[in-house]
Amino acid sequence: MDTKIFLNLPVKDLNRAISFFNDLGFPTNPKFTNEQGACIVISENINVMILVEEFYLTFTKKQICDAAKASEVLISISLDSREKVDEMLEKAVKAGGTDYIPAKDYGWMYQRTFLDVDGHHWEVFFMDESQIPNQM
Image 1 (cartoon, rainbow, N blue to C red):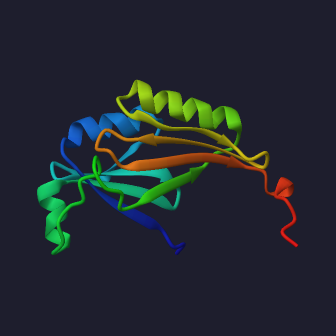
Image 2: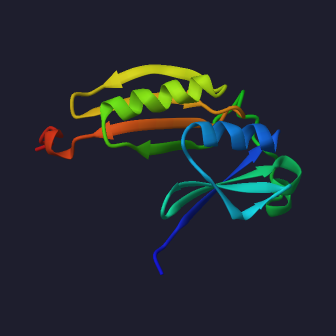
Image 3: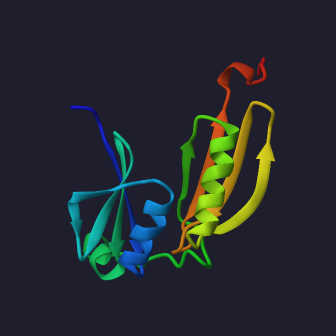
């Protein structure tokens, strides 16, 4: 069995969060979805569990970070092209997210940043590893 990643994020409004991620093109896995949380499929081995805050708190003794005021995690996703990066950012904003930081172009890597509807920080990027400058 391949190792899979299940990133867990607290959300205030589950249906709004599901709609946001579905609008980005990420489907919901009904096998791991109910009224307390939903599994958003990013790729074959990467999933995001969006959990209503009350349910999220059953997994931790810590307070939930207010993502509007503090950063706890930066979630980065690689995409196949610069155009797909721009498309993802446009979809995020149209679905209710925020264009958070201006685009960064390093020549070998192009990056855009958005906040989802709960304020979680997402970076989408295209990287051409053959163009990474030699560090020696």
